[in-house]
Amino acid sequence: MSFIFLVIWVLAITSFTLLGSVYAKKVQKPDLLIALYVTFTLTAQLLAVKISTFDLGFTTLYGPSGVLLFSVTYLFTDIVNERFGRKETQRMIFIAFITQVAMVFFFWLSIQLTPAPFWTAQDMWATIFGTVPRITVASWIAFLITENIDAYVFSWFKAKTHGKHLWARNVFSSIPALTLDSLIFLPIAFAGVLPLWPLIVGQTTIKWLVGLLNIPFMYLNRLILDWDSIVREMWNENPTIDKGK
Image (cartoon, rainbow, N blue to C red):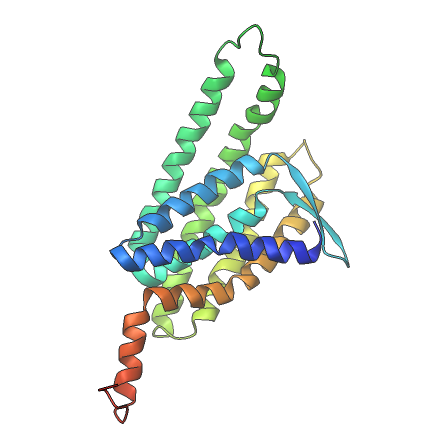
């Protein structure tokens, strides 16, 4: 994947957060944001089975295919944290964790079932989905640690800055958490199977790139969710505006 296509893919993937915010604005609940967060998390774990090449032009990186989706999950937590608070964010993280446990069990069950005599893909099925439990267990550990760290740091940063500097709490909560996630997840998931250092460098670099590209989307999502309050603030700060227009 070239750098230009990588950027296009990241922008396309991240655009799903806008749909979640539009729905959340309408119903005043983060339901669709949570559903998309769970979908991104589960899909990223399935895609992690495949290691992909990311050609940035000046360098070539390697990482799990799900890295693009998983990086955006931290944007989801920041969006929910910003609008609905840390407790709602941690509830979302817990929901995603339970769905991961269920997914691992279902895949394990599918492998145990005796295949039909005319179905010849059992070995391939077991090879692909048999690695999912190890990847998912690694993800559980990294997920519970780093997603909660992101939620706490974002909330702490918001309180310390009195709600200002949105870009700073978005970056300084997500980037360290994304880095820590790579350092925890990859050794547990792939040690003894794949070379770790190229994966750590590749996945971490891609996560940083996604995190930076996500900053404008953080502002767009807050604009969607807080449009009414933003308009009221502008209204109150400009009393000379003709309010009859």
